[in-house]
Length: 355
Length: 202
Ligand code: HEM
Image (cartoon, rainbow over all chains, first blue to last red; front, top):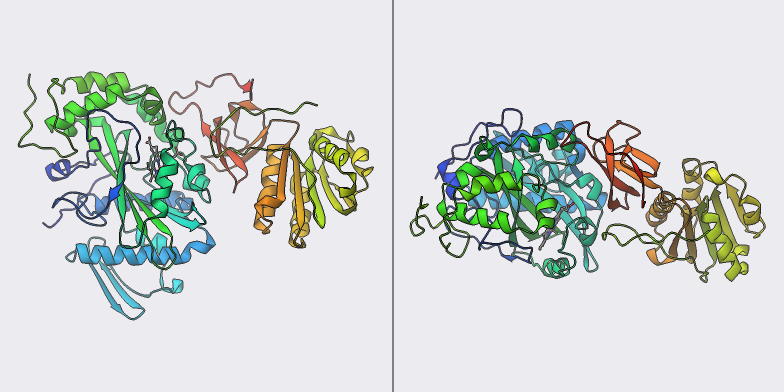
C-alpha cells in the first residue's frame, strides 16, 4: 500500500494521531498477562505482512512529521547526535545499511543508484535528491550518521566492540525514554545499563551481552521494550525533563484515555560490515490508551500487566504516581475473560468486551 | 583519619582501592587535600618509591597541613598547585612525556581522581597501571543534565546548579568521560517543592 504521511506534532498542541491501520499494526509488547524483564531476543527476519516486523527499517504514516520533530530537537541541542572520532566508518556502514534496506524494501519511496563510489540517494517523502561520494565526508552536509538518521525514524546507538565488550561511542538520540546520549557516550554495556533495577541481579545483562557479541552480519536480532508517556511526546529526554516532567501531573479520569500513551520501542541489532560495530536502532511507537483498548485482547491484558507490575519497574518507568488512575481507567476494559497467547490483536477470534 | 566506606551502588559508580607500592621506572602521584594521607601511608610501606616519584598536590582547604610532610618524603619532583584547573596542563605534560612502566597513583576526592584518571587514560596509560584511593571529603563533581554545567564539590542532596540555578538531585549514575555524576531537576513534577538539602550519606 502507499502510505499517507500525516502532518502532525509531537509537542505543543500534540496533534499526533494513529490511523486505524497504525492501531492494528501497533507492536503490543506483552505476549502474556504479566511482565518481567527477560532476555527477550529473537532473529529479525521479517514478520507478518503489514506488521512493524516486516521490513528491516519500518516506515509508517508518522515518518515525515517525526523527522521534522527530530530537526527541531537538533536545532535546540546539537549534542543529541554525537560520534567519537573512531566511529566515522561505522557511520558510513549505517548510512549504507539504511539506504540499501529502504530502497529495496520501499522502492516507491526511496531510490539508491550506485556507480562505484558515486551514490545518488532519492528520498521522495522528504524531497531529497542528493549525489555524494561514499566514504568522502566532504560530500555530505554533515557526518554520515547524522545525515542518514535525520531521514530514518527512531533513535540509533552505535556500539564499538573491543574485547568482549560493547561501548556506546556514537548515536542519534531524540526520541528516548529518559536517558542521555551526551552523558552515556563512551560507557560500556554494564555502565549505561547501571540505573536499571533488578535486571543486573537477574543476570539479564550478562546473558544479553553474550548474545549481542555473537550477532553476525546479515543475521540481525530484535526485541521490544516499553514504558509510559503522558501526551505523545517523542523527546522525553532528561535534558528537557524540567520542562516536560510536569505534564505527568495533568492526567484526570476524563482525559486519561486520550493523554496517556503506551510507548513501545522496537529495538533491532545489526552487525556492520566494515567497522564490525553493532548498530542499535530504537524505534518508538506511541498509542493512546483509548485507541489501544479498541482491541479487546490488548485492553484486558494491559490492565493485568499494569496492575501486577513490580513496584520497582513502575517507579523506574516513571508512572508509579499515575498507576491508580491508569488502573481505574483500564479496569473498565478488563472483563476477566482469558486472553490468547502472543502479542497479535486476534480481532477475529478474541471475544468483544463483555459488559 | 578513618577511610569512608561507600555504600554498595550501581555499576557505573566507580569503586576505589588502597594505594600499594608497585614496581615501576617512574611514579606519578596526584593527590588533593586529605589524599596526602594516602601518599604518606604509601611511603610508610615503601619509602624507596619516592626517589623516582613526581608528586602533584592540591591542598584545597587543608592549606599547609600536609605540604612539608610530603616534601620530606624526598620526591624527585614536588609541585603544589592552587587548584586542579591550574594543575591540569602540567599533568597533561607529564603524562605525554611518560615512558613505559610509569605507575600512576591518585588519591583524595572523587572529582580529582576521576579527572586525573581521564587524563591518564587519554594519554594511553594502561588501566592496570593506575591506582586510586579515596580520602577526605565525599563531595561529588556533578553535571547538570539540563544545562551541562559542572558543579564541583557538591556535598548536599539536592543542590543548586551553579550555572542554571535549577534544584538538582544527586544520582549515582556516573560518566568516566565527564568524571562527573548526574544531577537531575528534583521539582520538575511539582515545581517549587524542593526538599531540605541533606548532607550526602547522612
Ligand atoms: C547494545 C544495545 C543496547 C543499548 C545501546 C541499550 C541502551 C539502554 C539504555 C540507554 C537504557 C536506559 C538506561 C537508563 O535508565 O539510563 C536501557 C534500558 C534497558 N535495557 Fe538496554 N540497551 C541495549 C541492549 C539491551 C538488550 C540486548 C537488552 C536485553 C535484555 C536490554 C535490556 C534493557 C532493559 C530491561 C532496560 C530497562 C528498560 C525499562 O524498564 O524501561 N538492553 N538500555
